[in-house]
Length: 266
Ligand SMILES: Nc1ncnc2c1ncn2[C@@H]1O[C@H](COP(=O)(O)OP(=O)(O)OP(=O)(O)O)[C@@H](O)[C@H]1O
Image 1: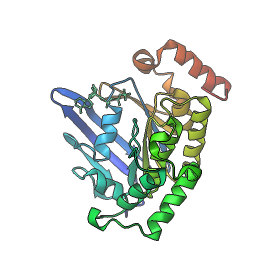
Image 2: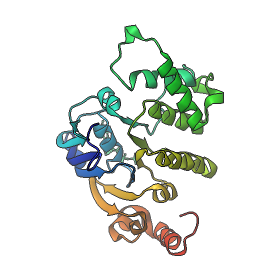
Image 3: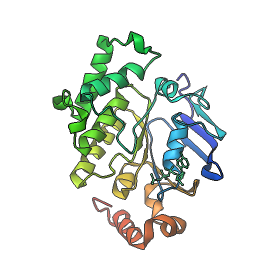
Image 4: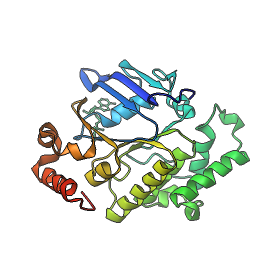
């Protein structure tokens, strides 16, 4: 990416239709370098579909998307990853029968440049990227374990390791703490903060509000494919539409107390 000025990623009026359903219905988003942007919203709001469109898993129906000075609309997931945009998935996306290290090797090998499967040969650079990513997420000791044996937290860490092994400039995390317990959530939270401190730009989807609000510099709430709120974490619980469509009054009270009294956890 050659353009260091202005937003790193710009999405304008992105639409994704599945038949008559507009899963993403005219969403615009700009992401600046070094930000953590959090996306929330009820089930079926279109959050994952928006990620799928940005990261080239599925094509947009309408809209424009630019990463730096590159128009990424119409590019495939492999090319988008090679440009410097990596992601994780809500459900496990790993080769279960391979080891932890082999999975990250594959990400490091294919995620940075055009490669051919018949020429699949790992060089030192790929191996180093893999070891670095495994150490970063704390999975080095389990590098030789088969993925099928891993507990949920390690599977989440593995997806993050695979993503960062591609050396992205921006990282998309889809529900990185879904299904985890409190300590595990704290563990992933610390990891995301460490990434941010190293200069990584992050866009994340999460239902766990304490994770979403504690980490994000800016929050977006989607509903029925549209953005219904965009603002700082402290303003989310003040927005009556967000409370009615997503949070409910109990969560609103808890969040208001957190921001008013500076409690440690929302
Ligand atoms: N491949 C598809 N074909 C048809 N409809 C789809 C497809 N993928 C998603 N949808 C629909 O698009 C809408 C948005 O789904 P999406 O998974 O993006 O929501 P979400 O906000 O990520 O939800 P959740 O929080 O439950 O993950 C839903 O109504 C879903 O059923």
